[in-house]
Amino acid sequence: MTTLRPFICDDMFHFNNVNLDPLTETYGLPFYMQYLARWPEYFQVAESPDGRIMGYIMGKAEGSGENWHGHVTALTVAPEYRRLGLAAKLMEVLEESSELKNNYFVDLFVRVSNKVAIDMYKRIGYTVYRTVLEYYSGDPDEDAYDMRKALSKDVNMKSVQPLKDPVRPEDIE
Image (cartoon, rainbow, N blue to C red; front, side, top):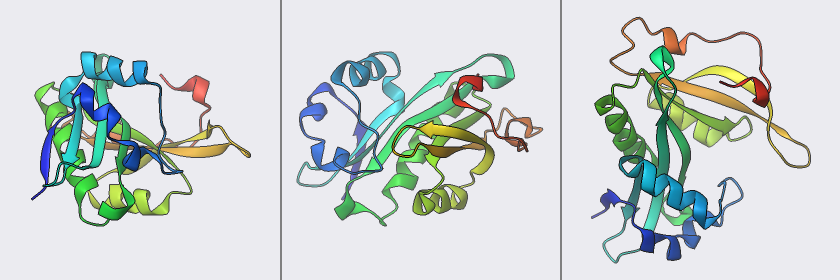
């Protein structure tokens, strides 16, 4: 049985099987430690019965006023554990934390080429809010979708009304 639990420092020495994926953004240890210290409720891991890390989600709460929201910084599942619903379960945990913080919505950025992830996010209620041009660096740079899901605080669903014009990374609030 899979266990969803808070991420702990020791997990950083055991999650390479999850991070070694071309679609997974990886960061330096100080970055993970900052998230763990500031937003521990937004940093969760899925663990197999034998103690292997199957996937994790890392996020934060940010913004102000009607832009107060939960943000998914990273969500990834090891290849051997994909298509089991783990990503959706991890998203559910982050959304619950965001509801408890009275966030208006949850947002995330995803490569426009990552159709599998986009379809999964749509199945769990996310919509494309806007396109961010050249968000991901590479050869060539790649656009991202800013996808959002309104939470109960956003009764008028203002946070998910799509913008028609794309933006550049420096234009993101």
